[in-house]
Length: 91
Image (cartoon, rainbow, N blue to C red; front, side):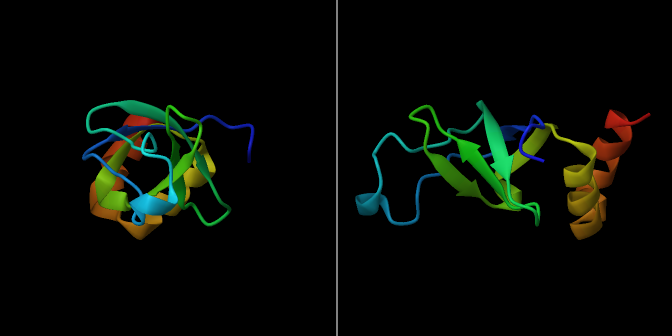
């Protein structure tokens, strides 16, 4: 799972929930694309420009690229939003 590429595009700017406990450069900016990682449950973290991982919520990003197992998890969670993207990925 860890060798598969995940890319996301941010729908909004996201910063850590507890900013004083993290680097000020840990931010995922609206409109920008980031490499990302996932745990086995499909939770997504953007890899910020400083190398830090920042967890992002479903309404904060869109997938640009993801392996099939991620698509399967996300389509199951929210069919209306992700099904069209998944179908476009696999015509």
